[in-house]
Image (tube, rainbow, N blue to C red; front, side, top):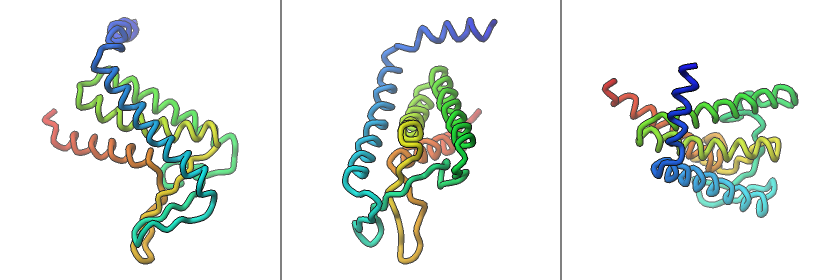
Length: 166
């Protein structure tokens, strides 16, 4: 019961100006990801596009989680993973609501990217990855704009945790 009272008190702060700014950041990150994916989906199909000696655009569909882990053709497993991802996003939103400004920034970056990939999982039943970084024969995992923001947010969270006094 105490949890519910605490949540109601905090829920009043949901629409404070600070949170609205961070929700705008989430929306901007989500839209940047959507625009990049729409551009790729409309213009590149399954062909690779050479940009320079270090980057190509190569559309692949990721039906797993990060870096293609847990890729499966089993609908039940895919749906369970999607539900789990949705729950993680909800948990991040909850933590966002009860955090300080720096943490809100970090959570916003992660949530914006996570929503972009979650949208694709629901709409396309897979996430379009297309950024192919490479040097000679070494290729990094193919990723997308949402992945960049998720990785950036996690990196900032780790760095903050290392330097945090508590």
